[in-house]
Image 1 (cartoon, helix red, strand yellow):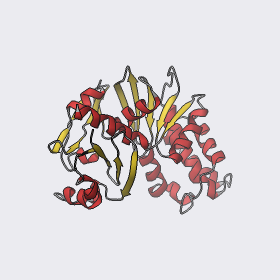
Image 2 (spheres, one colour; image 1 turned 180 degrees about the vertical axis):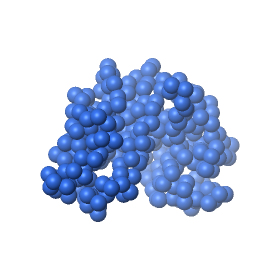
Image 3 (cartoon, one colour; image 1 turned 180 degrees about the horizontal axis):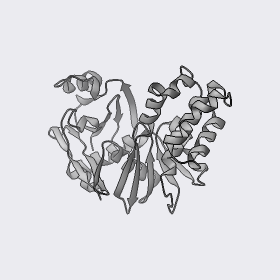
Image 4 (cartoon, helix red, strand yellow; image 1 turned 120 degrees about the vertical axis):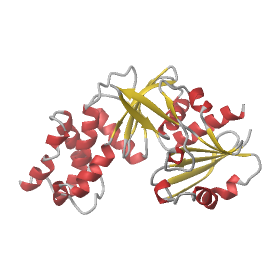
Length: 295
């Protein structure tokens, strides 16, 4: 068994973990050097700058997931078609340096004749399934582009993307609502967030409910410090409003602590239990994939 350098290289961030032969994290590093900040041809230098010490250790396998495998990344890796198993993903890994540095593929699916894609989240899904000892269920990966993934018998059957975080940012910064919101989000307010979720779940869609941020401000029905939390509840509530949510068991939410907390609060209004998994899902997924490549 080799040590593993596990890397999650996204659009705006770069994370890496140094794992021992049992998959335990020995050390982590992170920076803002996402692929958008890397000039063409500069990926090898950025990789070496951040992880050269680990990568240069004898018998080390370096496995990368995320947008580093996109057209704008280090090397384009394919999209595996859904339904996709763990073995399907392993078979389409692309090697930058044979037996040393590799990039995991993404996934694609078709929904009503329209393609959908993801890169990196598939690794988190397989990692979370291993951590929780599950083989099926609904998994949600909140973020700029939230992913809803359905797994059966360990196979990712389908998934759908919701631009929740991006819509929040657009409304927060560039819409008429920005004038009614504080300069910074500040500390999240649970009650205001819950009110936003309830408004979304019982409303006619975000195109209508979003305007309530302005009217609540206009008639002084909500203090300015609470409105960002309320807007967050509106967009996350809209995401949940679109889901049938009839799983046999709890929904698995894979994200950072803040997002996991918010989604758990939102799911509570749909009477759905939540299992939470953090960033460790990426390291577990990459470690499992690395073990497969070594066989």
